[in-house]
Amino acid sequence: MAETRGIRRRPAKVGGGVWVAALSSLLLAISLQVILLCPISPSPHPLQLPSPAAVFPLNRRLQEVTKLGHGFLKDPEDICVDAQGILYAATRDGWIKRLHPNGSWENWKNTHSRTLLGIAPSNSDHGGIIVCDADKGILKVNEQDGFSVLVSSHVNQTRIISFADDVVEAADGCLYFSDASSKFGLHNWYLDFLEAKPHGRLLKYDPSSNHISTLLDNLHFANGVALSADQHYVVVCETFKYRCVKYWLKGEKEGETEIFVDNLPGAPDNINLAPDGSFWIALIQPIRDGSELFVRSKIVRQIVASFPKLKLYEVLNGARRRAMVVKVDADGRILTKLDDPNGKVISFVTSALEFHHHLYLGSLNANFLGVLPLTLP
Image 1 (spheres, one colour):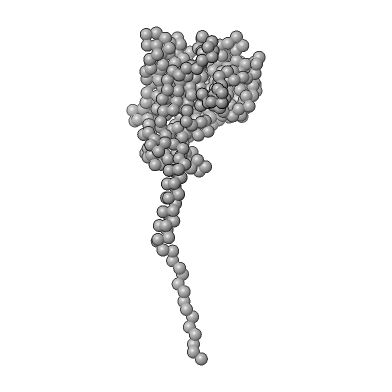
Image 2 (cartoon, one colour):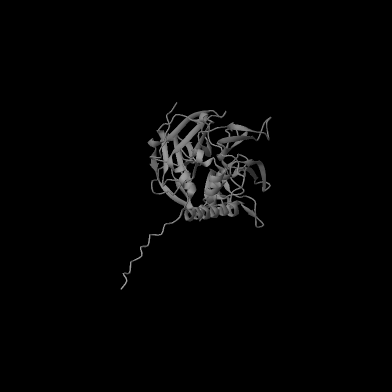
């Protein structure tokens, strides 16, 4: 009988062509996603970041803050204080919470909204505060009436205010407020940063005529708004231009615009008038250190924008990694800069308010208000 010999089989090898094909398929899928579904412009503007001239020495002053109302507040984005010395905070759970002069906290009014942003005290007879709601528009909240929509974001089912962000009331009752972006909303604000095109506006509401007028447009994410001490001009923060602009309301320059402060060491969020006529500005870091060159690429920004479920922007976002505020005089000169350089105590500070020789800090990454005693002159 003939001997039967076994046949050896060599393990199959995956050829290089298979890997090339797989990689090509992946690149094609990514390309199609970007081409067909990318929410930002196919030709985003160059991304602006602070120049080396904007770099200031770091300090750790904000690591000295006391945590006020710890555990009682959820991401208090903005704060204000009324004529009676009551401090208000708008939180992400829809509540307006307030701190009385005796130190007691109160769940004051529930707006049933998760999109509250900037707030300001009201000068009306009924008092209360004015609140920006990114979805609803401008709200009025007071003891007598609860909350109501003062300026609706919609008229006849047409959206006229896309993204109400911050507001301030003048002595004559007119409201000056920012419409951050006409293209992107609160929950995808980072797309406005990645696209780097100007979609923001500064608006004025006159209650006597019920009329809304546009003072400035083509702003790069219009954010914080503040009136000067004499109310001769209004300042609005252009977050993604790292600057604030001044619009003259009175005097020889009425109707004119000029740069108030430029090339800030961070992106300006909210701005508040200080008792001495200067301004406190909260600065955020849209990009973490070391990622600057990476995000300057238009292709990278389009890929990040095209896959929102992967939350790629959170890998680049530096806002939750540090805190920074600056004090700027009436001529736009930086007087003071305060830091928590690694977010050890507080980060993502969005508001800084001076009251009774203390600085109160709101944050979108905290369950408290930070408070820091300021050295008296």
